[in-house]
Image 1: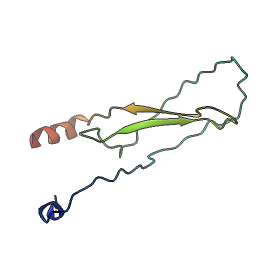
Image 2 (image 1 turned 90 degrees about the vertical axis):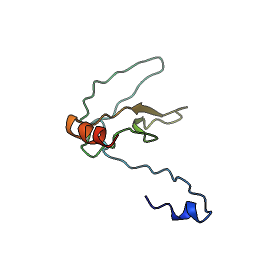
Image 3 (image 1 turned 180 degrees about the horizontal axis):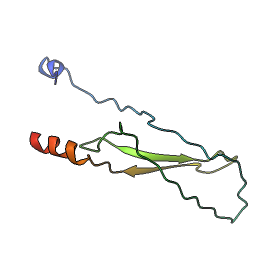
Image 4 (image 1 turned 30 degrees about the vertical axis):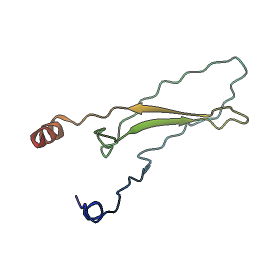
Length: 95
């Protein structure tokens, strides 16, 4: 890694970046009435380019509703992404 800035007395700072790997919408609209609950079974294939969660890396599934006057129309669930066996062997070799 290039640490010239740190050696020259400049502080290094991390800049968080967010990138959407995949996006999906329900194929139909519906209404949920007060007190009503609704569940959906969803199958999601994790894209091949999803980063492995090592160190400070974070990957999450974010869901949202297009709901007028919703107090909190979004939800973020943190995921743990492990490498496949080949990548795991490569990463282990570096340890």
